[in-house]
Image (cartoon, rainbow, N blue to C red; front, side, top):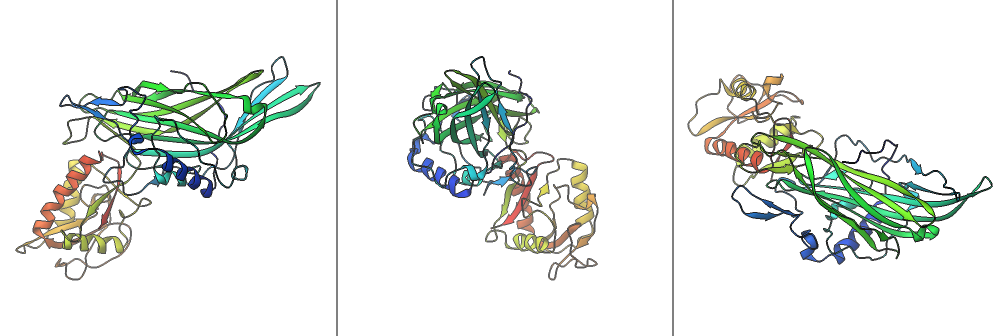
Length: 430
């Protein structure tokens, strides 16, 4: 594996109008059948399940991924920018590559076409302007990039050309497959001079518990304007043994070549995917974005007393409803038992009812982490007072059949979304 170059680099913010126009163009021209990267890729996007059947890796959101969220570590879009330049060669020519500032980008992009094998990025990519956005199985990042050519003669350096580009990084996985993909696409929307003669090619690489299955980004000229140059890479996790968990970060190195000028390299990394064969109740391997807080939904029509309790508990200040303030999964049986006993160990015996606690016992935010109990009118919990605040738990006597069903709902959700110990998740009422 190629070692990542040590250099300063930054992600640029692109105006929403630019990215919206870009995504509208992409969506309009990519046919529905291109939603799978099968075209031109042979079988590199196929994976074998435990049953021995072949399944295809496709780009889609899971049922628990209702909308994208920003990577938690990114408090805001990065706007500072470093420029990477080569040293002048014997002829005095040099090149620079730099992620561009918002003011450097046009108000719109002309219609263009993606390569046949590229996957249509989701519409929410238009908001990934300088920040990593993701769902449980998808990540997107949109940046700008400027390639500049110069010539130095007798100590005087002259800019001989410039090419301005938009770059889309899009990566996707599947909760039931050991394979994930990272594609990169760029389009030159403006430029002049010698920079227009450049070509670009790409090389995919990785870091972590994975192997490169296949990649393709052949050398292609930047011209014509508003045409797309794309690469697709597929990776396989090595975390396949029973109980195994592994993470993988993927990189694309883009190399710009131009007759008479030195080659210039820039790189893009997408956040780690985590793959596992440790999800209880699933016999296969799958890969997810571990920092994304998927949504556990309780339907008020099917579970009215459970849904009402969750709504009241969250309204009183308890966490779990939002990306900014999610719950955290625990698989520690001792913590789970402690949460339940402290919350409902002294619940009254009422025919047809049982004690429900929120946050749910299978979260780290239960009473094992501290706090006190609270309740609400009609909950029939004697000796428990009302309260507010972000810590503690709410307890309420709810319909026993709904409470019993809740355990199954939680189990199905954790299994489907591969929510492991320490993962964030949200609880909402439909």
